[in-house]
Image (cartoon, rainbow, N blue to C red; front, side, top):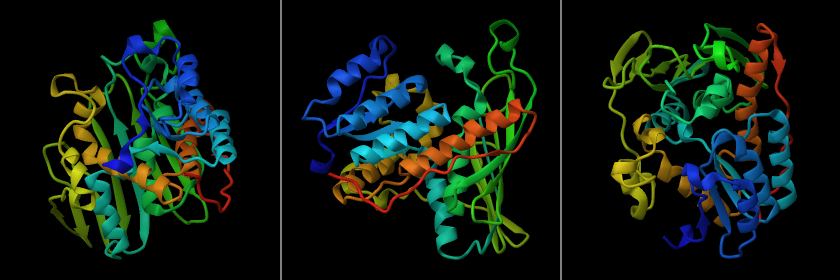
Length: 341
């Protein structure tokens, strides 16, 4: 598709990551690249994004935006100064399941939303060692984002508790909790939501799930992957087939909702194979990023929403370290301006 030309994607293979920020800053100014797509180790997300924005490039960055509130703020300011587009590529708000639940909300079938719950439980053995040093809630956006997107509100504050212990903490140090579970209050709303996250030493099939409970209808994620989700109308529940939604995309990229997009079949990334293809989200995200630039509008999620979704987990971990103390999230301003092409 002509609209998708001129996108640079930094190589995610480990041997190519030596000196990534230096090399990225060198390449960021190349005029043939108007947009940057980042799928790189978490620790360099912020520096890469800021370098690209400062070089006048649009940025699409995989989750999370950053691992500190300070770096989230730096990215927000870099986007405001550059007036270029920043989008955190959050798969969980472009999956088939999310689009189905969003249709229930938008059609009024859910009624008033009363509560939301999300979880992301994943065994990270076999992934790069830097995951051993990551608190569970620092990579919580897959569970946080669909809840806040369905509620159409940012997170305001959080109380979080840590539970259990990871085996490697005794010898390696680092984050001690096997599980972190949090309750959030939403801004300008009477809603609360619950989020649970684990990375190591918890017996559970991989799951990125969300449940949404309305006054008329509720949507619940399936217990195991081979099952179907359940929709409740009042107290009556039934399992439902989820459509693919490829018809909402340009014909040229519809096939990518059902097959790998990272590499050849024999070299697919763990995040794609372990995550069941991310619910067909990849072409939807790519299309949104490119079209937002062409149309001169913020993408979804934009830099402010990305910062809130990311800060939710950062502040949740801080709350867990403080024994469940309530932590207020930063408020990121949102000026009424578009983006420059």
